[in-house]
Image (cartoon, rainbow, N blue to C red; front, side, top):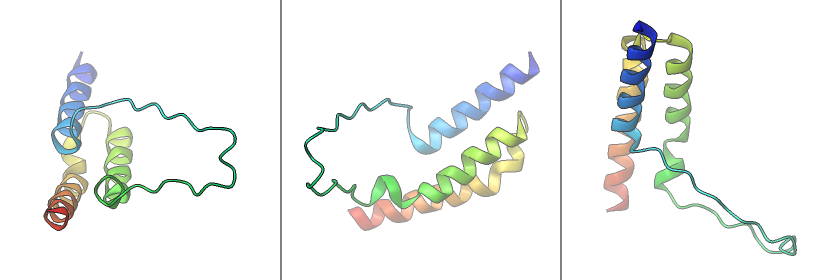
Length: 87
């Protein structure tokens, strides 16, 4: 029961920082070999490295989210700074 509670707390923390989880389906046409691939703009990929580090920490630390506070702070700072640049 303790693992389930810790996992739920970790998921809430991730959702608070990164927003609710969404699933996005993309369709790639087969004839678009010569067409340039669409690139994503700024915000979503700007903090990808911090997001991955935070996710990895949550996966390895189990229910002890306090070990990931540093990564959560770095991700929050990144999102704030990239949000201010986009405005």
